[in-house]
Amino acid sequence: MTTTIGLRAATLGGVALVALVVALAVNHRHKSSAPLPQAAGQWYTAFAAPYTPSAKTKTGACGIKIGPNTTGVAHAVLPCGVKLYVQFNGKQVLTQVVDRGHMPPGREFDVTQSLAKLLGLEGTQRIQWRFAR
Image (cartoon, rainbow, N blue to C red; front, side, top):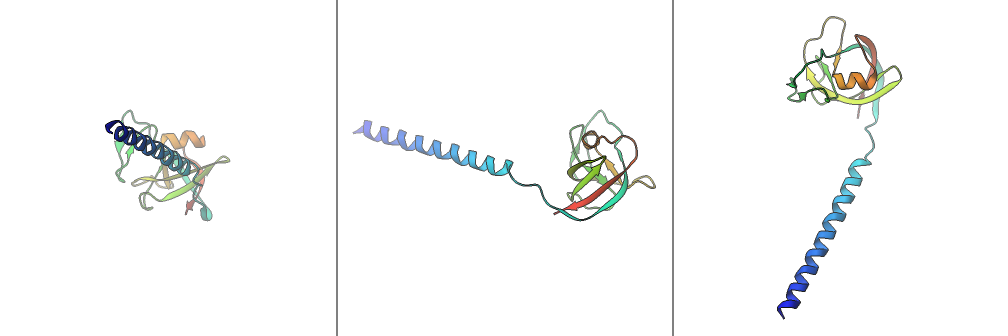
C-alpha cells in the first residue's frame, strides 16, 4: 500500500514539474515576442552628445545606475522613464529618460555611451526624437 501512495505522489510531482516548465516556457515566449511600443506624434529635432566617459558606474537623478552598458538619455525637463525613439544617421532606437540635469546651451539631450555606440553618434550632433506610446 505504501508503494502505491509513493508512486502516486511521485507521478503527481512529475506532472506538476512538467506543468511548471511549460508555464515558464510560454511566459518567456510571450515576453520575448512582445511588440515594441508604437511611436506617437511627430519627429522633433534637437542637439545631443554622448556623456563624458566615466570609469565607474554612477546613479543618475532618476535613480538608475548609469554605466557603460546603460542605454538611455538625460533631459532637463522630460520625466524619468519616458520612452522615446531616437534617430540618427538612419538608425532608430527605442530608449528612455534615465537621467535629468542641466544641459549646455543649445543641447537638449545627453545620451549614454551605449546609446551613442548604437546610433554611431560622436560629438554634438543633430538628432531626431519622438515619444513612444
